[in-house]
Length: 227
Picture 1 (cartoon, rainbow, N blue to C red):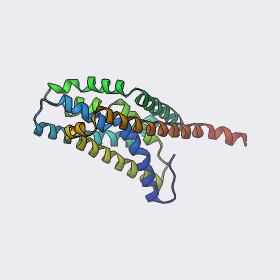
Picture 2: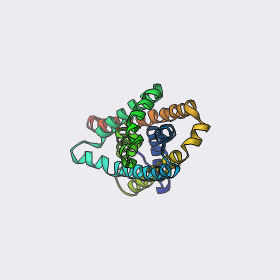
Picture 3: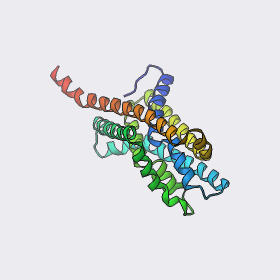
Picture 4: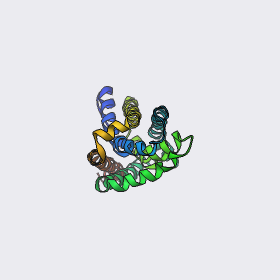
């Protein structure tokens, strides 16, 4: 759980928690390489249009998951502590797979994006979901939403910071897809994998931290009853 004495500090803390986690799971640089391959037969104008739409749709998916996802699960009786433990495990497991085998992640992304090569309306499906912001991204965003403070000014500071991170991720997706050919020339496949592994390690640490907070939430009543 995030806590800070000043609202501004809470915004910064939430941003620093959310941005590396979302960047790691969305992986806009690696996805841009696949986007360039799948969209190779499209005109520059079409690719620019699709880049903007995917960025916008990705922002909407991220914001809904961050703002609403945890509350929906709470409505069905899932406690915040249980959500944090389960979400932290999911985030850590996904980060581990990204860290150890980015090639498998790339192959899965290529399969998800394949239908976009010859279809007409592809901005939302499959380019946004599941290619850019699929189930993995949604689960990470919901888990981040579960890290919110209980209420008060800290809650709004958290959502402002997390929403700013989602906005920056969406802008990164737009720019990366728009200039995918230049990214290929600059990074190449190996460079993208290096960035993916570095980001995956940060995601692993964040998953462990959220899991730790969840364990503390679940065990707090036990320790209070024993004292």
